[in-house]
Image (cartoon, rainbow, N blue to C red; front, side, top):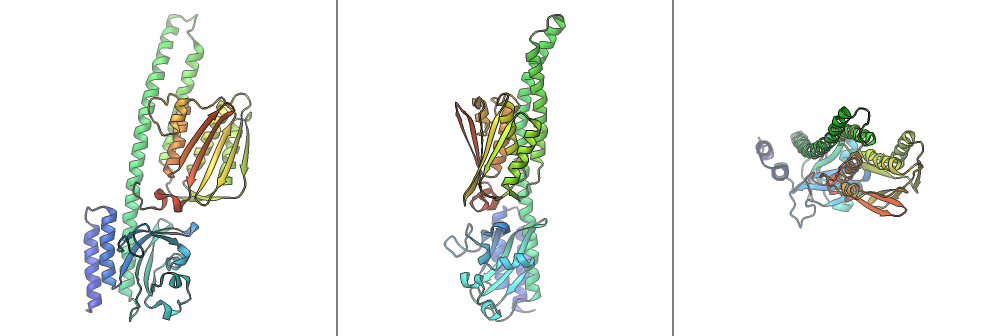
Length: 397
């Protein structure tokens, strides 16, 4: 067995031991990259997160120090990297002397000057999410053999599984937090409203011919029914697929408008969308927009009017919903700031809190302004290259 094969076998055993340890994902990955680079006889190794639709490439684990060429957090245009070839082919690409293998004019070699490269795609389900790559500015005497390519494939597959496990754990933590918070809201509201209902029922029993405040009893029951519907909606959101989807913002807004106008035919909803905009976002984005439109239509008077305006920049997309209603009450403004406490006294507050939750899951912001002419609520969703939660390491920022 040659020296190269021995080093590769030692790296395989060492990496397997590391990945079986209880260390966190980042620590395990960086140690595995060190051993992998040594086993393949190259200078550096990187794990990258990519968003192919946006040409985004970012290092999430690396053997490079903070002042190196590609430390953690380094970004690049995917089109200027050899990783684009890996993603396009959906297979491992191995180069041992790039300029003498016909790659001298390739933009990746011209940009980064790497002569040796082994890159393997990382996939979660059916979507490419990154690459595992081993690189060196120096050329090798011999091509990477089948054993080297097989090692890179195995390590990429293993790290993809580790990454998926980490993301599931984070999603579970988020789900548990969501359910816990809403459980407190639901218990508080049910307790208060059922106390009111019980009091009225007791009076009705005593005074069958003179019901006590039947309108309040009816409104209380309606709140309970609405809160039940919100709990169903929240469960759907919590169980929603967390995969990012490229969406047409215009289509999402128009679908939301059509749904609300169908339920509230007295409402007039107009849109101002200057240009077509594609945004990589979670499927729940439409829920947030529809929730705001429903709130405006339901509480805007007999003939409510509402305008949805979409503004786009290189960094973010802002969706503003403006209505001519009586103005958003203080407790509902608090809901849009993520306040889950007892101020959320009815389903509207809960619905707006759900809006905040969805926007926050995109690392976005909600801004609210109330004037004599109505309420404006602006949801700003950062594009993935500006969004640490979507294209970062997957860890809380």
